[in-house]
Amino acid sequence: MAVCDLCGERAVLRDPVNKVALCGSHFSAWYEDCVADTIRRYRMIPPKARVAVGLSGGKDSTVLLSVLTKLGLDAELVAITVDEGIANYREDTIAAAVSLSQRLGIEHRIISFSDICGKPLDEILAVSSKQACSICGTLRRRALHTAAREMDATRIATGHCMDDEAQSVLMNYLRGDITRVAENYRTNAAELFIPRIKPLCRCTERATVAYGKVNRLLVPLPECPYTKYALRAKVRTELGVLEYKYPGTMYNIVTGQERLLAKLGPAIGEVVVMGVCERCSQPARNRLCAACTLLERQER
Image (cartoon, rainbow, N blue to C red; front, side, top):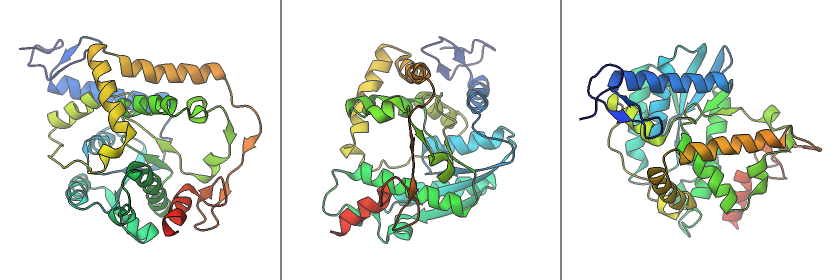
């Protein structure tokens, strides 16, 4: 039986990269310090901020909201749950989100796809489910931003962990999306969108799940039925294998991307100016925003 390197109690997790074994209490403190350090390092939350936490009810967002309430931040926390309208899936996760926000005493808002586009995701995907995750992601971002503005939030926090960040980097390369790989352009988007932050971006999913289990935050929940259609699902599987064989792979991908952006230097060239969508008045680079472009195609 592995024991904690700091106190000799039973260890709950051994970090495969640093080879450190920690008991429940020392591991929880380490995880919380990691999140706090990430927030400080990237200046994610300024004083007096009003932070809207995207609370799906799943493991990552549950841990995120729970940890943020523990850190004693000079900020006000609120929670937003997006109900996409997925039968036999969302009911359970929404119930978990409601229960957690009530237990923590956090103001909570639920916004649905029906609220923002008139119909649930299942109905939108009735003809074809192949682009499910792309469609859902676009509309979910719209819903989250809409609710955050209505709640006067100054930051939007999501539960993306290091695994998600590493997967996104690889997916950008696989798609040949050089714009997202380089991010070396100027835009006025910061003036139009509420800034998004990812306080768990330097914590692995394995550590996040371990924190949730140690602190008894997690309940069994179903998996989204549309996940099987996503490129991310395949990338997640392959990256998981690489991480198991070569510990630290995900960290290297994420920090390598940071070093690449640092070498590219400050953004240059003309500013990519964004305006507002003709249809919904949300920020948009073209005549219509991504969500309204998607919905317009659906109406044809």
